[in-house]
Image (cartoon, rainbow, N blue to C red; front, top):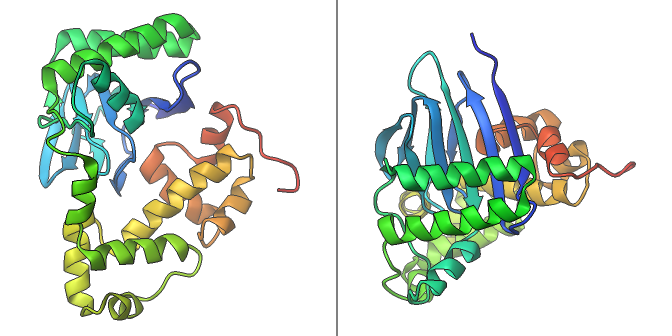
Length: 280
């Protein structure tokens, strides 16, 4: 069986862009969502992933275009696994390029998730390789050109300002999300959440999953992983991060972190040039 490898790091020249290069065989991503866009370039093998209620496959040459906050999974579709490179541009990075194109305010979206676009794949791959090589100018230029091309060819313009989407969110679900965000280390029970939302537990579960794509306990773990990333970037040791983010122990943190990010916390911290502070 081929060895699994993964590297996750920050773009040196474009703030707000993370990068992943990985070869996976048995690794499986659990259901999760990213705050950023996710642009995956399949170099070899076949990946399958659940996204938006459908099971999709992406093979060599494919570009997977995942919108922010959409729940998805990821695993090999065959015994050989898959090799890919991923760019995670933050929403402001993408909206800034959309504004340069003259698009209206708001966040663009990609209606088609898996595309076979040779030009876009070539530009994004070149940008990724240049970033790994340390060529700041080439990588930032190629990334800008590649993102602009993806938007022109495959994106849907924002139909309305993002505030409208916020207004559509059910108040009870929004309140539950806020409560979970401030109770990461001491989460309420489902009954407590239901009482706060003035709903039955079953009704809250159904509404919460419909709005976020996840049940409350899985959404809570996603928030914990996001906090863990921030704390690791601040230089805290993984053992301290586990406690601060509400995980039972470091092993618990590692298990959930790798299911979402693709690498363990220590490797994530090292590749981003962060060193855990002694005594932290």
